[in-house]
Length: 203
Image 1: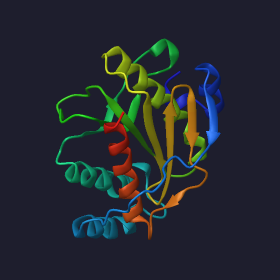
Image 2: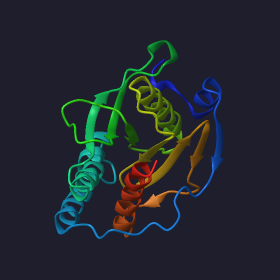
Image 3: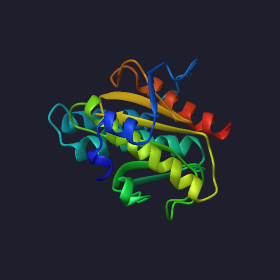
Image 4: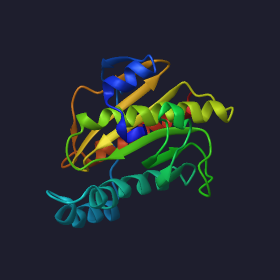
C-alpha cells in the first residue's frame, strides 16, 4: 500500500486517529493577490477547467498560489512539487506528493520540518481525503525522525477551483465543513495559506 491507496476510513483506523468537522481557522485576513497571479489564473482557467487533467490543474491553478506564497514570505519557505516522501513502506507511508511545503529556505532537498501537504485532484475531493491524511501522517513521522517535532501538520485537497483544508494535531484530524471556491475567493485562499505559515511559525 502507498499514500494513494488509503481511504479516509483506512488511514483513520490504521493510525488510530480521530476525526471531526471543524472550522480550522478563525479570522483569516484576505491577502490581495498580485497582478501577476491574477493574470496567471485567468489564463490558466481556460486550459485547466472544466475538463483539464490533474496535471494541468496542478500546474496552472495550484502551483501559482504556492509560488506567490513563497514570494510573500521572502523565500523563507520551500515548495516541492512531485517529490516522493518515503517514510515507512511497510505501513504504506510512501509515494509521490503533489506539493510539500517546508518551513525553511532549503530548496535543494526536502528537509524538516514539513508543515503542509497539498494534493491536487481532478474530480472528487472527498475521495482524496484518505491520501492526503496519510501524507500528513507521513510528514509528521518524517519530522520526528529528523528531530523536528511540531505538533500540527496542515493539508489541503484541491481541484484547482475548489479548495478544502485539513489539520492533523496529535491524533485528531480536523476537516473544514465545506469547500472554498476559487473564483471570487482568490484573496481568501492566499490568506488561508498564509495563516498556515504563520500558525506553523508560532508552534
